[in-house]
Image (cartoon, rainbow, N blue to C red):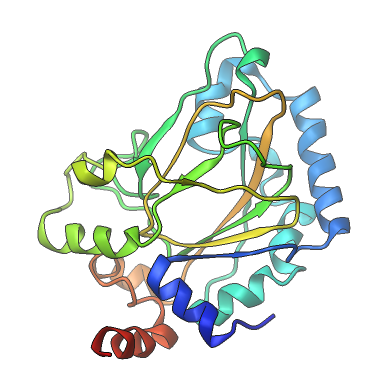
Length: 254
């Protein structure tokens, strides 16, 4: 699955792309069945904070039917069209926003943040960054108040300036105050839709006030050289995107 020049330009500008229906219904159905069975039979409500910070269904992260949403669909080719060579993806992060009416206590919200930088469960001096977040929708997400992810289009450029000019390792703020004050755009979609989001795009997740769980499968994709320049890639948004760097420079000078 290829990306058009217009789609690449949109990614450079916005830091994200949404590809509707990119994952087939059979792959989605198998993955959704696994997660639904786990929610019904294995989820421990007492661990809701841990699931939210890390992953739901942690024992299923390497299951072929979950990894297949990325590797056996067009999602991997889309990641390659943006990054070029990337490291193998060996685990799935499952994120579910449970309706508040179904929980004894509220599921914690996620404030505006960039993954792997100053996360509450990480040491401030520890980086767990990557290049591209790929999300596959497993449930209908039609209600912005249903726990939808909220992203800041174009925020990858704002964040790279902050990391370059104001931030250093050990700072516990996840984003600058002006970014934290924005609510973001809710990501709505149908099963099989794919979100491709630059690692530096700030995003948040709020409460689920609907009646249905919101379920997403996420894949953290790293350019093959990412580990060699983690700090630099926070300051240069195109370091992990060599095929887009020239397009960005041309757009900036036009």
